[in-house]
Length: 310
Image (cartoon, rainbow, N blue to C red; front, top):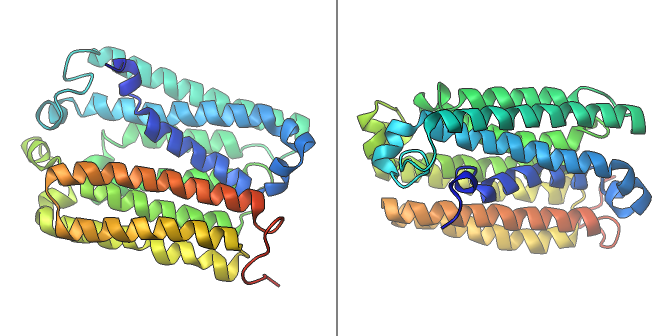
């Protein structure tokens, strides 16, 4: 049995969210990863980005479970808090400690980059503060306003790419933002569909979600349409961002999975199926990060763009 303190953090989710920032950096600043000396210059920041990103992501998971105790007693009684493995006050303390670590890492990144690499200051700590506020406010306030909570979680995914795009040079690029948009739609659709699993507990605790408002069938249709939007969004870099053949071939695999999930949702939207789909979407996002990483390392350097950007 996995330790409850590890389970409450949702390690796989934290890893994905943290890697959004790392991959955003790789895609926006590929030269930093292809030249060993430049990579070493930023290595302390990359380590702090990973620790801080993990801590802030984990804090959101922990605080979500803390505020969702009554709902989870019905929907998921085996989670660490409703099962009694972790006491509510322990979870709250742990969540606040994780937020503190995330904020300290944000400050440390800014100071290191400012003094060692002459970079702008403020991006990391401001991003960390925004993420900390969202983590604290999500379940307590946003989640109870249906789609607002789903949007907040998905904006957090998009912010990972945006942060990675801006942290070293403060110059937004088209490619990482298109990737961010695709990840946003994947996660947004996933969050909407998850409401189908929790209808009973949400209704009992007067939590309004898309599923409690429109029912399982329409929620599945809405989630399917949102997830499908990741396909056209992921095609844009081929035409406007100088994406390479590596990107085209790797993204085709992701698009096939996205299409399959969209169709699957329309055919079968039982709670047990939604539970499977939410994990398939997570795996799809992981594979997408791999595809984006390959583009960062090979696109434009080893493999030519499909449509060269003038």
